[in-house]
Image: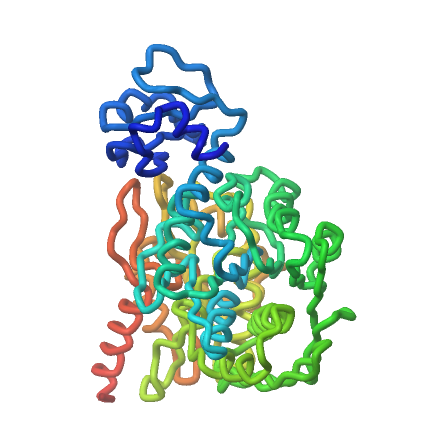
Amino acid sequence: MKLSDVQAAVGRKRAVTGVAYDSRAVVPGQVFVALKGVKTDGTRFVQQAVERGAIAIVSQEPLSGVAVPVLETGDARLALAELAADFYGHPSEQMRVVGITGTNGKTTTAHLTAAIFEAGGVKCGVMGTIAHRIGAEIRESKHTTPEAPDVQQLLREMVDRGCGACAMEASSHALALRRVDAMTFSAGVFTNLTRDHLDFHEDMENYFRAKRRLFEMLPPGAPALINIDDPKGAAIVEASARPVTYGINRPADITPGPLSFSVDGLDFDIRTPRGTVRAQSKLVGRPNVYNILAAVSTAVALDLPFDAIERGLQSLDAVPGRFEVVSNPKDGITVVVDYAHTDDALRNLLETARPMARGRVITLFGCGGDRDRTKRPLMGAVASRMSDVLVITSDNPRREDPDQIIEEILRGITADTRRGETPIYTIADRRAAIAKAIEVARPGDLVLIAGKGHEKYQIVGEQHVPFDDVTVAREFLGRRRTNSGVV
């Protein structure tokens, strides 16, 4: 659907001032698109939208008795994306937008990609889980990928402020719900696919199909950068017009040289069709090798200079909530905050942490309420197999009982999955749980606080309660230093 269709329906005397999908936020002159949501139907709010000044309605359902023109469509979500792109002047055609999808690694890959663009003299916006960055301005992110009008508005602002590129996380929800339809991507990145979001997608095949849509949407000349080590990598290659593969274990277009890991970061060569790039980064661990390969593959495929690639990798010190070390050497222990909230991400986190621990690995985690319940025992099994001490707590319980969530996690912990005589603490209060994890740590131990990462809140019921793992961990580290006489 085009904006001109709406304009023709309302007449030339009334200009369309915007595209809305939330009736509560409608302002005079906007067209309201009535979406069929998971929990509600937008057609119920048409009257409210008209009362607030909507001059046209777009709906999948026939409507009668509406005081403004109604345009019917076979897919309201597609119409919303097309109208939003039209209204904001198709900003994705005026910059290089890199869409990044996958279960894990999207955020770090986006930040690495943006750092490389910036090092090459191209101002680069970021749209993703932690925040949306427009030039120097940082805005809170409520969704990894917001609704289509919000996406298009952010891209328009980036273009207007001189951004020549955008590194954009494309979530499976956004792809399934057509939030990034009617966009022109310059490249697409596939990081991996592991179990997550099955409360929404229902099964892994639906989840994969959502991710694959990004590559089916790419223009013929746009490269698809694909982790070929992932079991679904080959299927993404088949769906792509211009596949470029990267990997560690399998033959690929872009591969690393010999790898060595240390607490100080990563330093390795990357072989590409254009030559060899030196990757020096403060990021640590094998998962970040994949993230670096993804970002470098993107930059190479988009013909960015090698010196920009190397300087960009060096310039990124850390990504908030992604293996973020919040302790200091005086603490005697290492405390890391990480966003890992799936069994695969938790496994990667523990594999990264284990070689860095001089003593025990203490893992604290929980699982979100009103989300995929099948991963709870799987996360319990992974954590108990790979940790020396476990602290199981609340994550974002939402409308579920935190104690019941903990019980479901514990079902995955059996004699076969426990690492020796792993002590297990179950403490539903996350603040008290963090205090316990730091309290029981001995000199040389490494404490992992997993699940929430960068988040500054905890969702309890319908409320967003202020809570920051980093702040709480530093508070109890401070108390530990005071009690031990170390300042």
